Image (cartoon, rainbow, N blue to C red; front, side, top):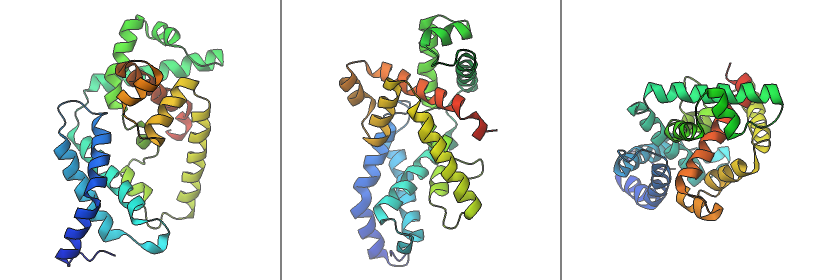
Amino acid sequence: MYNPRDKKSGNDLIEKYAPLVKRIAHHLLARLPSSVLVDDLIQAGMIGLLEAAKKYDSSKGASFETYAGIRIRGSIIDEVRRGDWTPRSVHRNGRRITDAIAHIEARTGSDASNTDIAAQLGVSSDEYHKLLKDSVESKLFSMDELTRSDDMGPGEQLVDVDPGPMNIAEKSAFVGALAEAIKTLPERERLVLALYYDEELNLKEIGQILEVSESRVSQIHSQAAHRLRSRLRQWQE
């Protein structure tokens, strides 16, 4: 384990895992407004790396790289949240979309289409796509948000040293519910989530695979996030 009092050990660690920090920072940058600087994300990621070095316990079974990746990502996400760069109107419209999807799917028993959602909101298709575009940034950490408790950041929650049997059981049950909810998404939304979160492709690369624009991929990602939120409401109440 890294010794925080050993300067050489710390420097070696930073040098070895700096590429991991940069890779995660650049991946997240693709989902953030242009005003966010990658250097700020890297700095936050480095803090996560050092925290990982201090708290890593090899007896828990996870490799240091896996553990550090969670810490780095969590540290960057928490830093972005502290910036509070999303306007309240965007959050409000995001809730309206989620509510509209829940209402339509409860009434029809099938996936809410773009046309259905726009009609429920009382806006045109173009206006709905604009709302999706705006909400992309507020929902860009949707998968982390869905697995995050109110008093703990995503990185901290995922690497909790001793969460207790009740919390472990609840977390396991929710992860199972999330996995099942993802299976029920429309095929294109499932594919975008898989390419983005599992394959770690950026929006441009996904657009090339699907032969659609980067903005369209953003809309699909955002709508998938809203649909998941509407289908997992019982876990957020």
